[in-house]
Image (cartoon, rainbow, N blue to C red; front, side, top):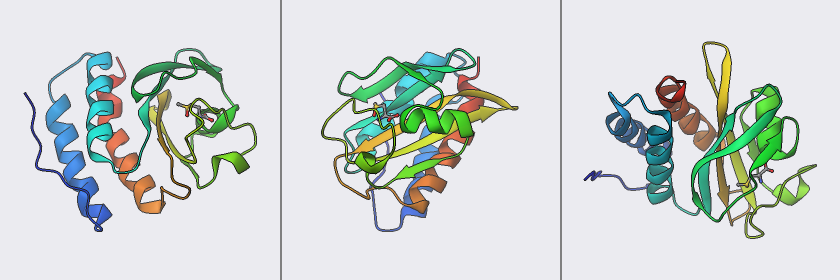
Length: 163
Ligand code: SME
């Protein structure tokens, strides 16, 4: 059983440092990528406020993402690079912070409740492993501090899911 002394506060950097420590402990010494992505999705789902989807898409080919472990409603399975927010993150390898998904060209609506989205590419030694995708039912839910915090989480997790 895992229990974490974690609470979302107005001090987002401090919250993400706590989350980083929790994720580090949760995945330490475990080489299985699926297990680590599954527990990471569960951790984010439990502790990040105001989200309706948290999970991973894996870069299984040079041009396509495939759904990985997640929490939330059943989702689109395959996303070509360049399509939607996840595909944009995969193609550019840049974090995508989208305040209004309905204004994002090509946004893929897996859950009609989603209003804003944060997608972080996971790159290990120059290789794109996949992306972390977070959705929120609230417009503008994610800001630069969420982007920095989640990028740090993925820098930690990346080598532990790279296989
Ligand atoms: N909305 C995403 C697709 C994935 S679901 O949100 C889980 C996108 O446009 O990439």
